[in-house]
Length: 183
Length: 183
Image (cartoon, rainbow over all chains, first blue to last red; front, side, top):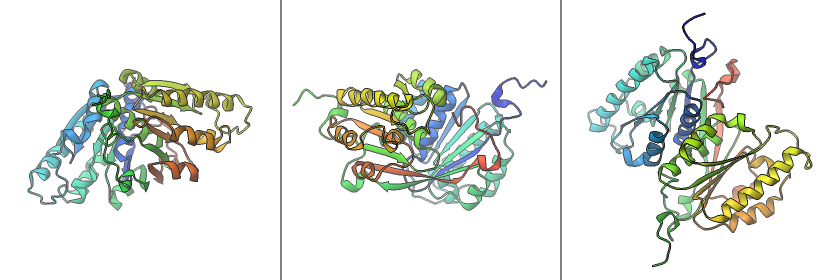
């Protein structure tokens, strides 16, 4: 017998690298549902939110607090500035330092990196380095990454990849984004 | 001014019919993330779970309780019996009666019908009748339906349709379903 008594840290546990990508809805919400499921099973969960600011994930943020999910907002709401010296880029690098510490600590069964494909896509982070750090994480830690345009290298390393495909969207009909549904 | 003071019941609110379908992961988890978002915004949420039994959604069920999401399990875990007189079929019809009452009451901003495509697909319910009842619901009520094989009629009536496409799955690699991630 080893000292590992928690079943989520048992030899059977194989931490998955999960990627939700594609142009459709549901990438982040599915990761949040996963967080909800894990918390409901008594597992520790940490969410690091890149790109978006507090307001952009308000509903999730409040629910996460009620569920005792640890949550860090490391985005300022500005998505479209690929400048590596922009405040957004610096915040993303700080976010990844925090995330890699949280992952390496082994203290969480699930770490969600929300919108994390964008810092990779913009070149704000060295993807090879990020993937190497993810590969060397403790064996029981699941990591879920969301965002459009997941790279081939990320997809190759991932265990579970889902593409969310938009079939029909209400904005096409002129319906505005609504509180509790879109944010 | 009308008596409708809650912004989620304002004239601007347009209750969406949301469908998460496809063979990939994330259909239910995205709906749960939506529930989490809505609850976090202070909106009332009700989940009616078809097909699966308690055990099949244990993590979500526990988290929903913590979030004060109303939850009804109307499945017995047996998916593959299309017999309209089976216990599963009768339970699904009872589930729809409950769901349509909850939706019509207007007391919830979001009603999730988890795995609801299957009772429709199996012919346990009259789809034309179900779609008519959904169409006549109070204007502020969002309804999210999950499950594979959403019918063309359901997709036609829906406002927001996402197809979850499986790109890569760990079961292909022989990794077993894991607590907190798969259930």
